[in-house]
Structure formats: C-alpha cells, structure tokens
Length: 217
Image (cartoon, rainbow, N blue to C red; front, side):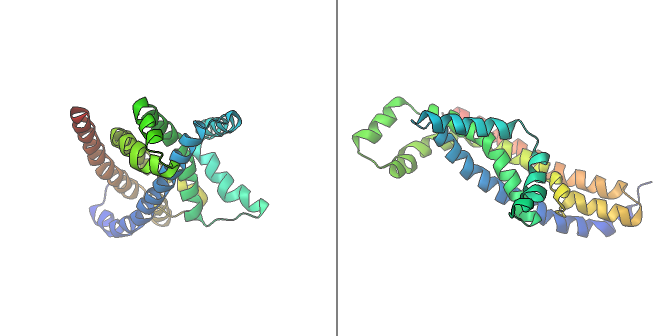
C-alpha cells in the first residue's frame, strides 16, 4: 500500500538525483546540436565519398539501439584504452545518438533555404563561416525549433537508460532506495510523476511555439 510518510521521506533524495538527469540531458543535447549540424553539412558535401560515408554512419547509429551504444562507449571502449566516467559516457552516448536525428532536421531546414540566398552569399563574396552564421543559419533555425524541442523532450525521457552504465540518475536512485527498503511503489511513482511534470508542460509549450511560428511564417 502507498505510504505518504515514506514517500515524503525519500522525495528529497530523488529530487537531488534529478540534477544528474537534467545535466546529462542538457550537455548531451548541446553535443547533439553541434554534431547534428556538422553531420548535415558533411552530408551535403560536394565530395561524393565524404557524403556517402557520413550517410552510412548516420544510418548505422540511427538503426542501432541507444542502449547498445552506451554499453560500447562505457564497457567496450576501455578494452581499447579509451575510458570514460559514467557521466561523460552518458553525454557522449546521448549526444552522438541524437545528433543523427538532428542532422536530418538541420538538413531539411537547410534545403528549405531559397536558392536565391545562396546566390547572395556568392555575390557578397562571404567566407563559409560568414555565410553560415549571417545568412543561412538565421533562416534555418527558427522553423525547426519545435522539432528540436521535441527531440530534447525525447532525450530527457530516455535518460533512465544511463543507469545501465552505472550513472546514478533519478531512476537508478529510486531503484537503490527500493532495494534498501523493499518498497518500490513510492519511488517509481515519484520518478514517473517528475518525468510527467517536466515533459508534459514542455511539450505543450513546444506546440504553442510551433503554432506561433506557423502563423508568423
């Protein structure tokens, strides 16, 4: 049966672990954004071999489970002399995995830029960094913000997978508490409620943002 006194007693410990979950999501998503943009640019590379290799890498990562990738980064890489702490491995796993999805988002945004804008870049004799920062990206990013936001929420909800590489995030904390007291109901319920209270309002804000951007376009 549900015990409110016990639930309130373990709540601070679970909320303290939320910092790890949010931090892993934040830094993992920053990495995903950076790598996703790089991948989308390389996929559009004029050198056919580069484009094909990057496409192959993207498809391979997208079609293998995130959990398997986390295991390889944390447990297999050390056999080749490359060792990461659990938090770092989690960020790398999340960032690399979701960068392949965001690369498609960036690619669709880039391809939506009118051809005339690329001609403006050539006419003004901009360098590549200037072209991307001053002309292309300012037009690419606003329309894709809602999609990016949805992937951020999805990544947040997948952070419990990081417990597989010994990262003590919010769900792993609930497991540890449950193993010590043989009470799992309260801990897992609180974790589910925390994910809902953070994910649902965020999804509603993204929907409103999508409608607003759609009206302004």
